Image 1 (cartoon, rainbow, N blue to C red):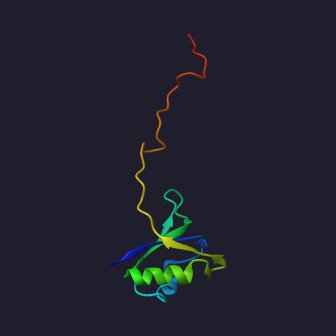
Image 2: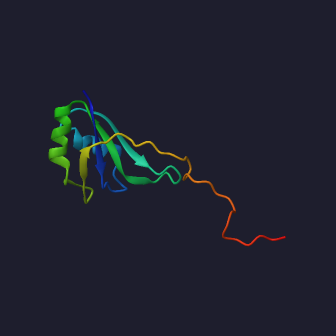
Image 3: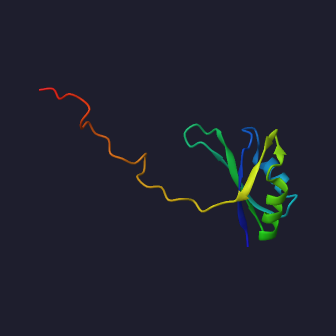
Length: 104
C-alpha cells in the first residue's frame, strides 16, 4: 500500500525530478508533488512524495530526514490528512459596523 510523505524545507530551486531521483534510492516512488503558491505560482518550499510501499516510506524517512538537498536540510515525515478549512476566504463577515462615525 502506498504511503504519502511530507517533505519540507525544500530550496525554491529544487525540482520534482531531483526529489524523485533522491527518494528512488529508498524504493519505488509513485508520485512527487511540489506545492506552489496559488496566487504567485512560486514554490512554497514543501511538497509530498508518495512511496509505493510502507517499507520504502520508512526507509525514505530514515535516510532523508535531515539529509541536505540543494544546501537545505530536509524535513521528512509521514504526511497527515489534510485539515478541513472553514469559512472560505478568510472566514468572518466584513461590514462597516462600529469603529467609524455615522454621517447624517
